[in-house]
Image (tube, rainbow, N blue to C red):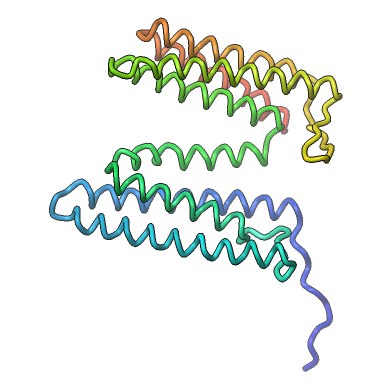
Amino acid sequence: MAKSNVGKKPISKEEYTTNKVLAVFSVCLLGVLVLMILQRLLDYTNTWSTGMVMVGVLFFIGVLGAVWGIVLLVREHTGKRGRERRIVCGRNVMIVSIVTILSMVAIGYIGTQPIKMLYVILPVLAVYYLVYHSYAPEFFLIAADCGVALGLMWLTRRALVSGSHGWMAYAALGAAVVLAVIQLAVVGRVRANKGRITFRGKTVDSHFSRNAYTMLTVTPLVMAVLVAAVRFAPAHMLIAMGVAAAYLFITAVYYTVKLM
């Protein structure tokens, strides 16, 4: 029977984006499940050694993945392997491998505390990846502002409670102010260039909506004020975090309605 000369239909951009989002959610979910097993092993003295062996095995897998990622990057750079619309490409393999290596090193030296942080970080990264591909570009930046501010509020509160790390509260507030100033400067420049961004000699349209510049100007200022409120009135941290969460929720509803 003669072979068909009809080539395989290339994957569409929308289908590729959907597959990428699903892949990221799957990897993050798998990571959380592995971390749950690892924490259970490390929490008990009779299984602690098994948990440390598992840490070593995962670290070794991360190293192998990094080597594989380097090989893929070299093949893609030399043109021996296409990387357009590929989920398993050198860059993605390297990112997953480096995160795995750093996580296992932290767990090996610190203990289970990094696992508790990764329980939050991995799902948050997956959600932000979905927002990046599904919503308007300015909402991704707004969500990033709110997420960073919430993290800085929590860090400020922890620093003030500990007593011995009070300087970290000022550092967190300084970071919020610096990030706000940088964003305001970049937004002002993009607005002056009528939405165009020049990076490495290439000009890209930001595709910002009409109200984007107002939102991207107000949001970092509001978040910096909330971080300052936690620094100087730590007893009201929950109120400040609630205001930031409500701000994010309202803007999420607004941009979700715009998608319909």
